Length: 184
Length: 192
Image 1: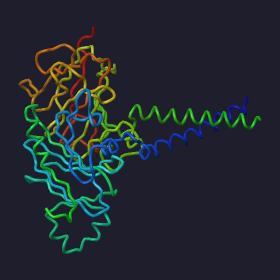
Image 2: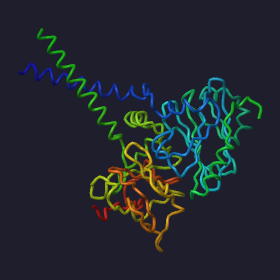
Image 3: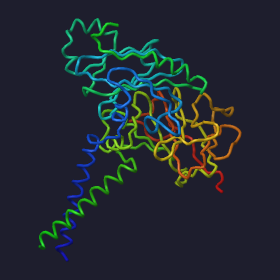
Image 4: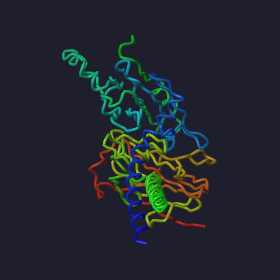
């Protein structure tokens, strides 16, 4: 009897290890996470508008139906990216996610303080390679450091009333997400 | 033989305990540092690079993109102020005021994060379209039947969750529940 109790105790302890291991591994093995869902509809390094969620169909669960949204799935292995989006009338935000859907940065129209949100996206190494003097000229541009080579930029514009949705969508449609060394 | 049986038993216990705990933790969306005010709960840290492994795992599992903290904070409510789960066949009143934010939205989802079909194609309200009382407070009627005022249809689903998203707000990781963060109450008015 004591033998079985000890075995059960040992099993429960091992179960704790299994629990922690599965929680840690899950993000790397998930096939239905947001990045994987969007990978099939969003080509690399371009802005793709997402359809508004409906009861029948939504690109992702728990999307806010009051927002027009678009994503840019980026890959920095070829070099830094340049991102611009004009702000819409109500509220515009740009959020950055790693490959594993962790939000690492976000900015909204008021924080950007201009008619257009403009940023440069690069990895930490690419940022370190920029010569010092160039960094000063680039100071009027916001530099965002990505912790991973690939990831997602989510662009969202609020339609305060349903009738204003086309306005929000057109603001999002003008977003650009291109390699920094490509001509404009 | 005894050793084999014994170790099989131990591994079986390990699998049940380990996978069971993972399943339970993820289906409840457990993570560290919840901010609970009334029936509303938010995990502000989930929208930052400091998100804990539980938050990361549950995000990966349900496939949503979390709201970045620089964008805002999302509160969810799946039960009323008395702790009863929200039932789409009941008349529920969400009323009061929200913490300061440039915009907010209230949205109704099934527990899986789908919108609920209804005759007026209304899935939520934004802070701009809501009709308010003279003192700035509001009342949203979450019911299956058409009602005057701010009617949010439930479509008669059995269980639903409400999401209150605050955009461009000071509510965040360091916020403590208190008077500076008044959240709307969630009360059942009647139930058939």
